[in-house]
Length: 284
Length: 243
Image (cartoon, rainbow over all chains, first blue to last red; front, top):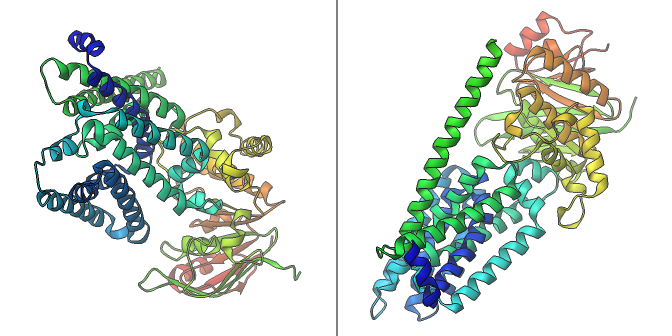
């Protein structure tokens, strides 16, 4: 851990990694909170995995894989949103299918791309140490887009994630805001792919927000705490992984997962204690 | 007597893809009426309400609310659902929940103004949940949550208030309190309430529509054992009784 912080001053690539991790936590805190309260973790999983199709195609055509990821993520979000709105009954099957088909397309494209395809691994599992200044600018741009959209449409997003039926009755264009929310999830996925890769994205999208939900009582505070927790996990994960040369993405996820488990046990125990105290008071 | 009806259903039929849930339903609701819709489970009561809200489209027939198709008049309707779609552990306070009733009226981008807050506070005061304003939804009892849902509907400043089984999961004492509230609101708005408990609501409503797939008017002075029996056996009854 100390080794990491002393190396941080010497190596620009570590500084880039740190900045990238912090930028990613902003998106993961804000949009992750919506994913948790709206319970669309499975949809977010479908979006993030089918992104590989776009990345593979971009890779094959010699274009920027992240650009391809962005396009694929938005297309997947709209497709999944449309599936949920029109074929509600077969929702899980269809999203499962999109999930796998997206990945299959990506694998086919990558296998037919001439040359050395080591970067496939870095997209699947992320490589935060490869974040370059151009990536940092793109991540900052995505953060700005998320912050602006959520600031402008906070009430509508709140209404749509709280009670869609009631929002529709109040004349809120629910379908539009639902799809917009999924598109925000899609761009956040692309933001996080840099850090932990598309397979592990779902953990960073849900765990910090789920921990925050244990302690705060409003969506705004949940976003703030989830962002701070996301930042803490990426910095800790980077620091722990540095000296033994572990994969940074996987380490970050393990830090987040362990914290979630500890927090869950702690809050369950606290709730039980409170319940017992209330019962005792009632008996006396 | 012949005031224009605020809700008008003519020959409305509906099915969810299988057998008809509603068949040839005609209904006129007048302004400031307190209408109770009763009937057995799966008799189509909630479906009828959802047609009036424009959440469902009729298979046949026409639904008009305030003289317009329901989709265009629903901002003037307050709705209290039987099963709210939100999860109880959503991180939101009572006040924020009630504010949702102001969504259609709020400014561009849905930001709330001072007037919206005042209306929401007034709604909370009337339903006696003002002291719970800062509480989390997950900390409320069933009766308190039901009051909050009524407050949310009231914050819409509706001309018609529609409630689907508002007292299904709460005890008798709270049930009386909620219907006393509704009786008071009835002075300024039309109220349509769905219930399975015909005996209880007949003390409050001024007309009872009995629904079991179909609905026909019967002019009777009171609801007696026979009416109830025939409602739950046969298809169609509507009992009108004046207090």
